[in-house]
Every structure is written in C-alpha cells, then in structure tokens.
View 1: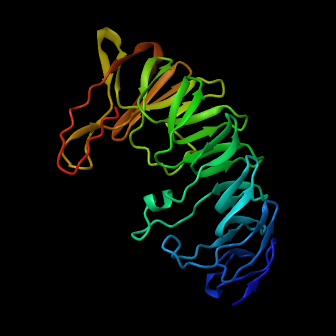
View 2 (view 1 turned 90 degrees about the vertical axis):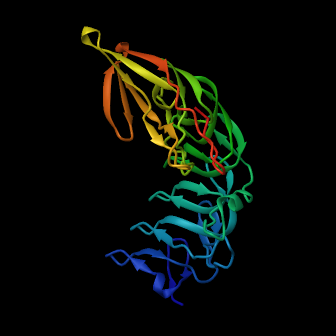
View 3 (view 1 turned 60 degrees about the horizontal axis):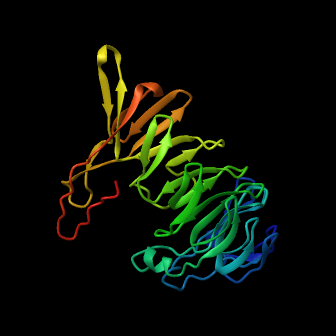
Amino acid sequence: MPTIATTYGPIQVLASSVETFPSGAIRSCIASEPATLRTPYGDLTPQYSADTLRKRQLPSITFYRNGMLRVLPLEQQEEVRTPAAALPAEQITFYEDGAVRRVFPLNGRLSGFWSQEDEAQLSRPVKLNTPLGVLELNIVSAYFSPKGALRSLTLWPGEILEVPSPCGKLSARTGLSFYDTGEIKSLEPATPTSVATPIGKIRAFNPDVTGICGDANSLRFSRQGEIVGLACVANSFVIAGENEQAQRIAPPLRRNACDGETLEPAPLFLEFEGDRVSFSAEGMAPCSANRRDVSVTGFIPPLPRLNAGCTARTMW
C-alpha cells in the first residue's frame, strides 16, 4: 500500500482511492492502516476499517488544494477541542484555513442493515457553550464560523429544546441557528406556535421539516429580533384590493403521501421585508402586498380520513 505525505503526517492508503488536483496535490484518499494525524484539535485517527453494520464502507479523507483537511472521518469516536467545548466526534469538516467547520458526534451509514433508530440509540447528550448559555442535548452536528462562533445546532429527531427567542420561550425541534454575533437567526417550531408578526399573530409551523440540517429553519429573525420569515399551515390571508375586491391566500392542499387521497395543507411561506409581505408555496405563483393591506384569518384544513396502518397528521 502506498504512503502519502500530508501536512498532518503520513497516511498509508488504498492505491485505487487516491485522487489528485491538476497540480498533483492530494484531493482525496482512503486510509488502509492506522495513522495519527496531528491537528490543532488533537491527534486524530482516520477511519481505516469497515467491519460493522453501521460502517460497512470506507469513506474518503478529502483535502483542499493547499493541503489542508476538508473532511476527516474518524476510526472511532474521539474528543475534539472546539470553541464551544470538547465534543465527541466521528467526523469533522474544516475550513480551508484549518478552522473547524462542523463536528458530527456520530457518522454511521444508514442502510437496510442500520436504521436511523439504531444510530439514535448511540447518541448521548453533549454539553456545550452557546449564545443561549450552556446547553446539554443530543445533536447530529454543530456548525461553526471560520472564527469559531457557533452558527447552528442540528438536533436528533425527538429532541426538543426550549429557546428564549425574540417571540418569547418557544419549543424548537430539528435545528437552531445563530448570527455570528450571537443573536438567534432561525429555529424550527416543534408545534404550531402563535407568534406576533408585522401583519398580526400567525401560527408558525412547517410540517415538512426533514431534520437533515439545522442551518436554515422556517421561523427566521433579523439581528434586531424581528420576524423576517416563517411557514404556516393554520392561517389564511386576505389582501385588500381596489373596488372592494380582495384576494385570499391559503396554504395549498395536496394529497396525503400515506393514502394518496386525503387532502392536507402544504406549508405556505411568508417573507417580511420593509413594508412588504411575500407569499410562496410549492405549485403556487408567488405574490406580495403592502403589509397594511393584509389581514390574517384562520384556515381549517379538510378533516383527515384514517386508514388502517396510516396515521393522520394533526399538527396544524
């Protein structure tokens, strides 16, 4: 097996795994034997084996053109020093200058042999410093700015965090993000939650959240704490028009993915900018209006029909 020299130390690699940039610098490789990479965050061992149900394939170590690490999968969970805390990590990504970008406490590969539920059972709460103070919770990943500010936390499905937001205390799921100066940038409401907006109170909630990434969530704030965007399925809106004509905007209806027949509301997205409010949704032509011409009303979706083996969503 060939050995390549890196900024962090030599790595014995699978010959067929080596990819290079046009300059000849290493772009990616797969470790074939134990190696110690000396980094500012500790001595780390890249993954070199794939003999468990959750790690059946060997992932690549990737580099930037300047030789700095980009993505580093680890052989086993190791403690990594970060600006927020010493965090357990099975994979780390970096910026081009070597600063930590993301830390993943777990990095099992989901498959027919290993499910998300299997992986979740291995998750343990981590304690870290955040703009909200010290938090202890189960995270999928922590995302940092190049200067070390905590930009976001992605939460494990089922993890709920009580957040002192600009709207008051809210229950958040999936993710929470921050500006580099520490203010809350976005969060994902765990349940339909009434929030005060420039056009009135709206029940903010996005039923389509996947939980993959907590960087950009549906309830978004400016640095000053004003709501600049949200999703809803429980409100409709009336835009006053000339000659007493009005336009009604409501969450679009779609067929339930479970039975293919029952209609349910898809999320309607609102954006606030200056004195304007914009509306958009999948399959709907976007529109906007002066916010003083918009009034908020309720929206009652069709009653769900329950079929055997199918659970209706009633979160709205």
